[in-house]
Image 1 (cartoon, rainbow, N blue to C red):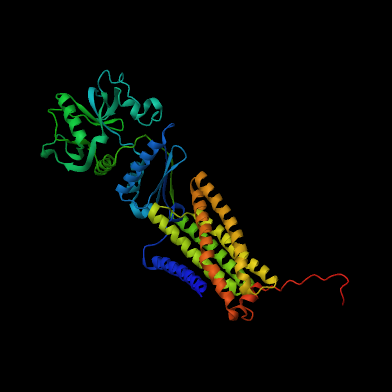
Image 2: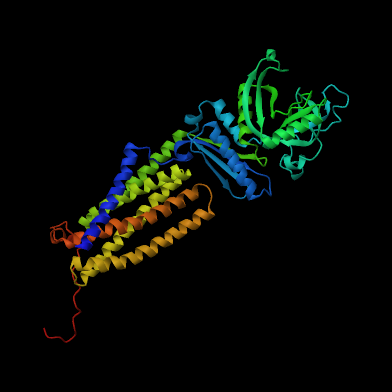
Amino acid sequence: MRRVRSLVLSIVFVLLLTGGVVAGFAFGNLRPQLGLDLVGGLRVVLEAPEGTSLELMQRTLETIRNRVDAFGVAEPDIAIIGERNIEVQIPELAEQVGGADDQRRLRDLIGSTARLEFREVLEGVPREAPNYAQLEVTCPRGEASSAESCTTDALETEEVVFLGEPEDTKYRLGPARMTGDAVSKATAVFETASSGTTQGGWQVSFELTSPGRDTFGQLTQELVGKQLAVVLDRRVESAPNVNEAIPQGSGVISGNFTETEAKDLALTLQTGALPVELETGVEETVSPTLGEESLRLGLIAGIAGLIALALYLAFYYRLLGIVTWVGMAIWAVLGLGIVSLLGRSVGYSLTLAGIAGFVVSIGIAGDSYIVFYERLKDEVRRGKTPRAAVLPAFKRAWKTILAANLVTILAAAVLYVLAIGSVRGFALTLGISTALDMFVVWTFKRPTVILLARSARLSNLRGFGLRSGIAAEPERAPAVAGAAK
């Protein structure tokens, strides 16, 4: 009696768990997070300079993530690919961001370095000056910017020549005296010329950290009567004269900004500069129409596989086929539930490759049922009743199921670690669904078949019962030569 109670409790537990997942789909916000190839969106691959350390790559990734989050984009998928590539995927870009201009802003924000520096102006040369051509710009953007000798860090302690405002004015600047790391807050503001500022329009107001406040106060004290250049990504945005020391720890960056440029600059300063300069390797937009078609075909393939398997098992194993139907339905619901939870907790996005992993695992799950039923058939052939045969049959089948599924899970784990891109999605769903198959076999199929075998009525149900499903005649002893007829 105690054994029967434990079997019933196991079945009830699985059914309640499945019902909870179904309720989450029906009444809650539990749903799989779909990837770019299913819902469309933006994919950008950024490449760091050769020799960039993993630590710098991790810091760069977090800065990009902060920028995307601050822009208001939900559920981005940002990961390091290979040794020095960062892949940014933003599903449903058009729905989240809106117009083409905002989408372009987001693309620019993702990869812009946004390195802010404060340097002393040693010389400012306008375009019409005689010595303008003799002053060579140091490492202009877009030219050899990935060369080791031209990295921002390498230039920090050097005298440099940058372009600035007004357009084509060249500035010879001293070493960087302070960087954007000292900025604690940045806000885009609109100022009018009548408010007392030297220049109206959109500007970026910033506040400094406590150490930055002290450094800025000392710097402005030293540069009274001189110019202080505000440099952003190797371009002088403004070079105001310092009339007096500024100890309050705040300032303004002006540079003929539009509203959008000022807000984007404030956002990048707020979230911090990228530790390394990145080059855009791949930038592509996936059409939602193509994604919907891929999703439709993937679902058709999965449903067709389930239906074909269910019809075959029902025809061949009768009542045991119905058990398989229920078990496979439980397996599918729990699998989608796990993928949905992974999307909410770690940002996993289900792609077409992931759906392929589920489709492949349908066969693996079906094998688990067939192995058990065939072992049960073997035991009955030896002359046992279904009730006496079910336990030894499951013990033999479980060893086979466990060995086969563990090999599949190990292969999926190796593939997930070594592969990149969508192949990892295939490996993950394959591993999850295979492990889930073992869970359903143990907690649902095993107790259900054992309880059915204990019922004489269900075992002997004409044309559909358990005995009809295994349809095995007891083995007969071989005839002995010369025996009496």
